[in-house]
Length: 444
Image 1 (cartoon, rainbow, N blue to C red):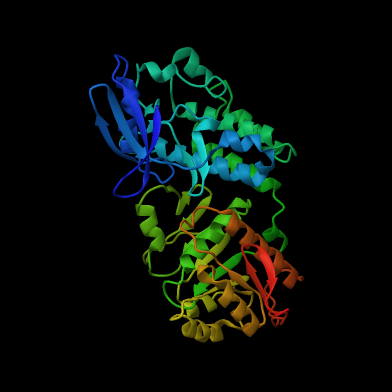
Image 2 (cartoon, rainbow, N blue to C red):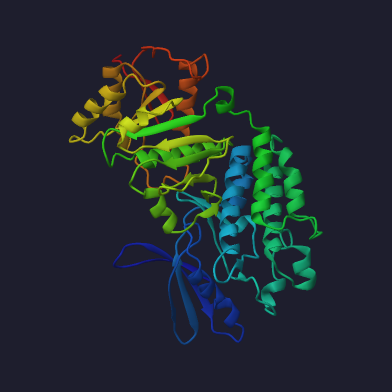
């Protein structure tokens, strides 16, 4: 039995699992032990465990959201981009568990009901039968949902990393089948290999699965960036603490969600990405750190040379270093202007430094549409409202509409494709774009 409770002093909600102290209770409270060893932003946190004469109570993070199963019933949500996002996020969680030190873990119970999609992104729940990789002899090893249970697990009660990969393949199969427009059929060969009954044919690691999956996604894409030779994007803010890193990470996330392989590079001394990496939830792949379908590269010290893959779009986050950002020959220059009263003067001064930058795209932070409209009218060009946003690694519908509208508008403004030729920036009607909606900056 699971209860939703509210902490009287903190005012926060928690999920409380009540487990009866029957003769068979020991393995049921294993989830508390398992969760206590897992520190990942997409896995519910455990806060405490209490008991009385009859029951144990496991107090966990309350995850608000809708299950993937529910999403699949609404087929309009199932698109190639949605599938790519969900699969890479879940694969990232499993990869984290499989490489946990000193004792790797196996989830064992992957199915659509256990994948929640909420305002904070994708979460994996219910770790009741998860186990350590080398653990044997536990009764729950032959548990599982028939549609998602690997055959060797059901028949021989054997578990391995490939057990989870089978479940991942079945999730991908279900998602492809739910895509009624059949735009994802090219991914079926990856799903079939992952869910192969023959262990010798099945992927041996999540990394191998992801490599094939992402290559298949890339091979089918007809990306805007490929058409328009968009390879380098720089971002800078009018002053420190305007949210340039937030914007840069969010834009990187969006492009990867659109199947455009993009790498974020930290080109400022704040070390924000490195601090995020230290909090957990990232896996290292060469010199890149991955979290779901976000790829990033923190600042490395002198003497460390790491190359970005040749086929990647790069987003260079210069923070408040406008001079450094201008030194790059970029296809797009994302300039974020502070919109607080005490920031406006510096924003205006900084704009004078960047106004002639090639590919200039102006943002007003904090979702301040009023000031964005004022900037748009003054500078006679599009201004985009970047919303107040808690998590740059999660792609909200608001940010998705914003970035989609940005690329569509910039494509129309630059009909001759982005390239290395210098040309003057055209003056047009004062425009403002917020949350993907284009509005005129002129008075009607």
